[in-house]
Length: 301
Image 1 (cartoon, helix red, strand yellow):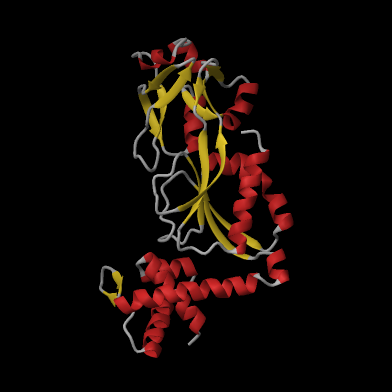
Image 2 (image 1 turned 90 degrees about the vertical axis):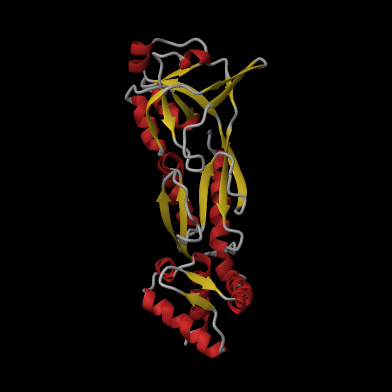
């Protein structure tokens, strides 16, 4: 029995609550993971997990052993990365999930420079705005906009997005040019709704001007949960958009969008990288987080 692989398999089953999910995240088959855990239990002569056809629960002995195993695995990783060659060149597979517009317009175009510095890191990048089960899906970290509602995660603020209000010329031709945000509540006006994963609905947008504040609810004919689809709906003239400036710049220059309410201010949207509290911050994860933070700081957002 490979004790390291057995401990790693056991820890992942505890974290995901499933042999199937553990196997998927470790790129192994379910039978191999089950055999490793059984071999570990045989060696230790204790039952680590209670298995049923529907779920897996850790026993009291298993919970105590898990705490020791996680620390041991972290120490082994630190021992490897403390070597000068390993520290200089972090390596291995890193699973991340990032918003689709940020991936398309900011992160992916900058990746050649990242790989020039870290050629041995393999990125599996999920591109979405959905709510991700980091532990269950074996994801190392997520990049998300807005205030985080899952307080169980460890989060690092890596920047903020400046926002504006925009609409396509075709929309303005049919609905008219609004002069005040409150006009967006009128029957003939429409917004494009964005469904936030943590809220499950399109929230109102708060706008400010010289001590005046106004929350725009608006009416929509379409609401989406993906940033690229949100932008596409606005470009198609389906309603008014609240966009980070970096998403609007090219379309403004080409006359495909018009900025509204220039004298109104919107609170910037914070950007975070979040990861599970029991997930060891490996060298490869640390350099990725630092790279994203540096990229956000150097990019006009």
